[in-house]
Length: 84
Image (cartoon, rainbow, N blue to C red; front, top):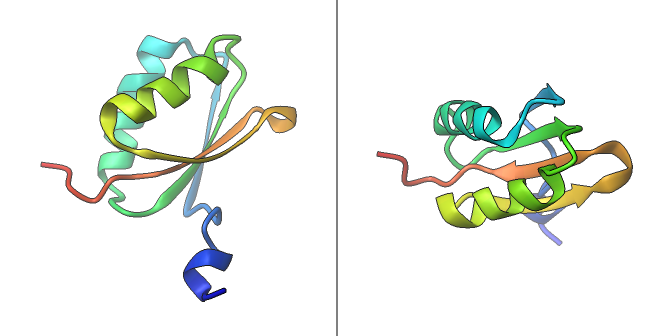
């Protein structure tokens, strides 16, 4: 295992979205992830729709959902590298 694999879920930044709804969170994630191409951000989201909405948003925007930890309401997302 190389260093890239060992640090695959090490987040550069953590963002606590609290109970923010999907629409607002999607806009915030786009702005934040765009500033950190290729890097990982841990997002904490307590909204009841987050476990379905965040993975769907990642698929639609081509950002990589690396890990979801339901017990801490955390999602690790790797920002895509080809933001325009």
